[in-house]
Length: 223
Image (cartoon, rainbow, N blue to C red; front, side):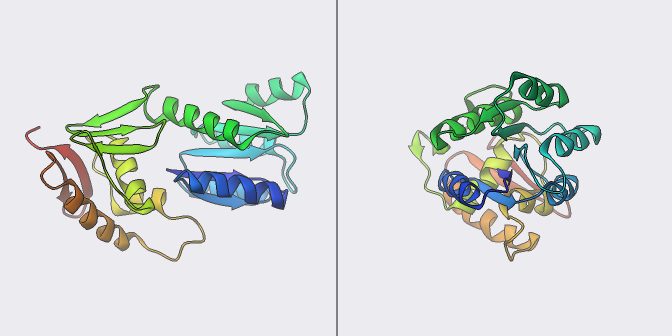
């Protein structure tokens, strides 16, 4: 899953980015509100972490514009402002959670997992496709009860597919969840990861089906 982090403090942005990437998420990092507004209007994210005190456009305005476009992706607000009125204002604008600075990275990661669990998995802890099981808390896949060894990008492709059961996903949609703004890659490279995943899923009762010209579907064999 792809996350947007918008934080203008370089050291904090670097620490949060490292923690999230170490946990396996694809992370784009921006440092001002105007750039964030543009990214949120043109890119596909599973979640946004948005600082309130941003240059050029503050986090409240970025959030308001996001919700004004009808986008429902979860937003976690970061702020040095501890006043209740600021938290209430952000929640009224459509923020899903609020975290005051300073904070522990472990708490941030836990809140991110909780938001994604509610938005992507409908509140469920696990997602299943036949013999393939995904645990959002541990972010591990298991096939026939054995842990599946995946690279970060293989994991991102499979994570995107299992979160949308019964849905054909195009290469472009998958690429939007796998590659960040700074990655030098294109949608055709998704074919490489799908090929590798097919090998790892082979014999496990789960397969990735190609719909020519449309994309890929994850399904249990026999469904």
